[in-house]
Amino acid sequence: MKPFKIILPIVVLAICFSIARKLILSPPEARRWGAPTAQLNVEALRLKKTQYKTTVTSQGVVRARTESTLIPEVSGQIVEVSRDFRNGGFFEKGELLVQIDRSDYETALIVAEAAVSQAEAALEQEKAQAAQARENWKSLGDGSKPTPLALREPQLAQANAALSSARARVAEAQRNLKRTEVRAPYAGRILEKSVDVGQYVSPGAVLASIYAIDYAEVRLPLSDDQLGFVDVPERYRGDHIDALEDGPTVTLRGKVGRQDAAWPGRIVRTEGAFDASSRQLFVIAQVDDPYGRSTTGQPPLKVGQFVTAEIDGSLMQDVFIIPRSALRSGSEILIVDKANKLFRRSIEVLWSDEENVIARDNLKEGELLCLTQVPFAVDGGLCVPDIEGEGKRVLEGQGGGWGGKGKGKGGKGKGGKGKGSKGGPPSGKGGAPADKAKGGAQ
Image (cartoon, rainbow, N blue to C red; front, top):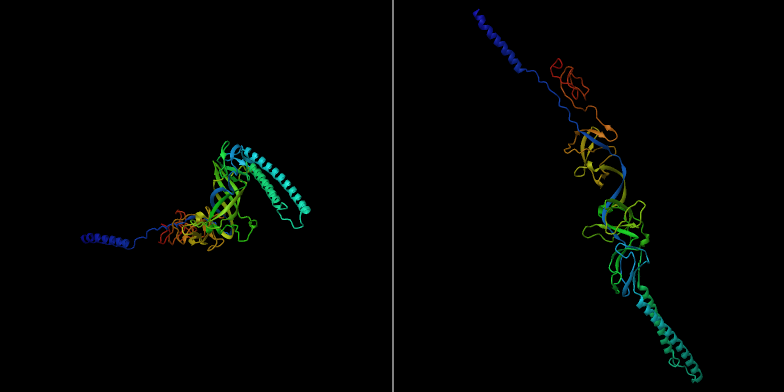
């Protein structure tokens, strides 16, 4: 009995040690879970070739096409002015604006006309005397040729000259009398008046500054890049001004109080030289009848007003329109390939505005453009594109889930279609959880 009591504990300890050693050397494999595949949902646009109408923007200040200064040609006191002879007043061509006192000029005309009558009488007397001198020479002369002085020809020429001079003074007096009426040279508007009733003016004094209202002009600067998209009218040596074709249309936009207004116009010419400081060329936009009442209720386009211009540019063919929001730094975009992988691609920007970017090269029709901003995009990264007008495109074999390598019922799954163990989590890539040991899931 005593040896048995000694051996039994040793055997038990040996068995426990053997089992412990076996457990330590061959532990059961830990259950593993497959990490779900990362998927990025993005919005996408299928690229299509199309045409795009460019619009070139610029800005400038409205000015009158014709500006003048009213200056009197005679002196005198202003006795009358037009009711519209004030800052901002309108006038039509030939309208009387300023009336200068006529009294002195009417008197001068009467004196000049009297001098003409005297000169005419003197001429008639001289003609009679010349005729008498010729008859006397014929009857009393010795048959020789008479001298001009004997025939009173110098006296007759002097009388004719005196009459011509008197008539010229009459014409001058009539012009001066007419000049007492200062009339508008064209239909226009008063920019600033300088005189009023009762003021004495002399030749050379400024009565008012005026401008024509038939057209308004705006100088619009364009850079070299912008000029490439605008068909500006060019005039060459020898071309008549009437031979110039109408340029592209332009829409001028401005704000009058709280109202946004727009005025249609046209580019009519370019200036003869580039601006030396900005290296830009100025084109001239012209608006017809800027002060006429429009059917749309637009306010008049006033001189000195700041406006922005939208010029109709050229029509680009077979190009791709890319939203500006899809453009990354360095003229780079993201393309989604057929395997739903993202790839960066550089493009050449042909045209850009506030909303779109236009490109042609290095792009193919039907490719998917990623519209979502991906700050740290990696070439080859998987995504799920939501294509505009087509919906989401998910390829077979993609999807998140838990992966196991068990040999039982929970073996490898494929794209969420693998067989998983009963009672396990929802199947994704790799099926339901399972261990590697035989006998299925634990």
